Image (cartoon, rainbow, N blue to C red; front, side, top):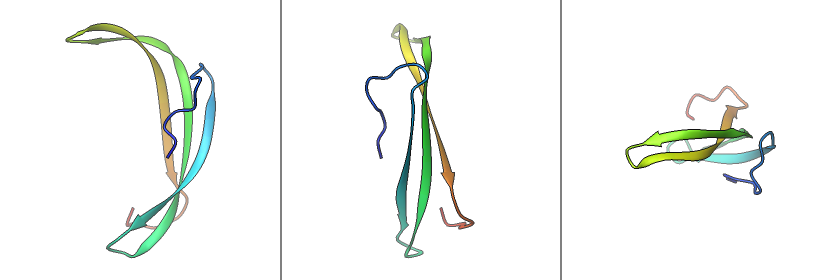
Amino acid sequence: MRRYAFPLESGRSWNQRITNYNDQARREGEISLTTRVGGWTAVSTPAGTFEAIQVRTIARLDDDEFWR
């Protein structure tokens, strides 16, 4: 699975399809992933405040299989 596509620029997006295999069910299925890069935002943590870019991924199962 491709997590990032550099350079990460606001508005950039990519799609991919991956195969998922379930050992117990002995079946595989396809998962559709759509990733979109958002804008920069400040993120506060106990270690300080940092600028971070938002990356969102939506995963969609393209079938009616319950085992995934």
